[in-house]
Length: 148
Length: 326
Image 1: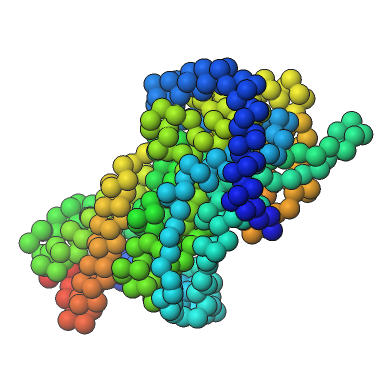
Image 2: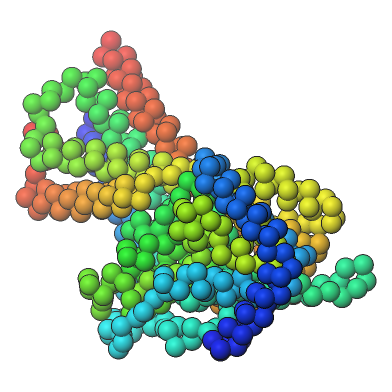
């Protein structure tokens, strides 16, 4: 059980790292600020690569989130075990996945989203991302766990 | 670099307009009115333009009509430009070169490309109007991080100059490098001009405002040779194939980047034209282009399976652990 928990943690951390890097890579900032010049980070300036990386990381994240959710339900772990920080992160992750999912639909051929809807989606997705980063950082520093 | 003075532009326009009007203004007006009427009533199917290269005489009337019709959309940058950091950020200023017509610029969204080819042992010159292809699934629109670009349900894609920050991502993801940047204009000036953004990107918007009024794009309306036709996709594709069959010719744009809303028909293979045209900065190629968004579209399908995989893994683990308990 402990090994599975650790593995989940590592997968979550690595996914979060790649999804964040590739997500910020959607903006033309990594080349401007020489970050893409660092060895091994050149892909951050290649927009089609960051696009694909973001999608792959999203697939891993969605699979992991759904797995943990169902694992939690099936094992009758008890909702009262989830901490306040845990609930907050669950809400943010849900927002990220829903807004991201809508953006994936938007990117499909022959799909026309309203201009305002696209801008709102972009900003909402970015806001959820920033929130998740800050809350995750807070959780690491203050040693706040998902479950008690 | 071809530079033409405004004065010569007016006299040439006047001359051409006079002769063309005398020749067939009634016919043209009627056909344009008919086309415009059909455009306003048929909104569901994307509108596609067909360019018959064999008809183009390279008179540049479309180029000047485009400039005239879109003059109020052109950038009026503030100078001096704010200092940008780091120093590698390029200043791109076309405001003093507004008369350039031999390439795409923020002030020239359509230009004429020249090619020579041999047909039946005879050397011929061809001229090709070039501008944004208005892709079916435009990477510029779909991948803009700010939603500064929009695709309308009539198939055109355009840049909102009030929102664009000039990061040039649209140009980098465009298979033809179409959008062009002007520094010193737009929203970035009100945010952090030194550290983010670099102006506004510009490209053909297929005269969206004229289409909204039921008019055809300026380049189509003004063409003395009726090089371009606009209409619903199925109709235009039928016409393009019939035309290609008739001239024993070739089609470009139907399958490029997964399909575009601009279809060229030429009597010469496009591979041959591509070797002949001058391409480079502001001068798009005529290469075959793979569907740049297809990997993303395929992964989107895989994303649908992701929740099922998660559920299956959880149930699998539950099944195994309950078996172990027994």
